[in-house]
Image (tube, rainbow, N blue to C red; front, top):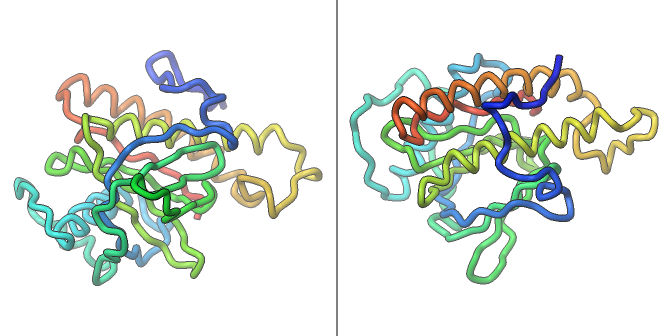
Length: 235
């Protein structure tokens, strides 16, 4: 079973650009973060997508952003989302730097490091729905072993590029792990946990399908809102 992208699923960047000592950087606006109260791998992919999209909407509303209301609130997802948004650094202009090992968020104005998440702590990434086409989010474990959904606004139609780049980073992280002999892997420095091997193998198969679906949807609607979620069960 190959995890290479098909001809219609080519990545956006040369692999070397996503090396641990390099990285692809996007200028985004960090909107805020909200707790996710369940393990992402404990629910199906449709529910994961709904959790992320409901989180995007909730965070946007909590920070005062006005969104279209073309879709009814997803009340069945409410149980999976925390009671309030963490507004620390809300609406800050940030750089999101993506490598095969980490997602790093720092402020543009003064370079303050807000977050740095190892990829094995990131379990899901998703674009918004039809009402939130310029937003993306990812779910990651915190140092306190809780889960937070981090929401960003993308300008100039960057949502698709950010989501696909995160997928490419995970593919490269998986390949790094696959090419490492287990007996030589240092558990403290490996970008991917040993016990995540089987999960990552299946996640990339799922990721290929989702990228294919998203590109088909985009060709039909020409809207970033049609991007499907990128799914990883690592955390």
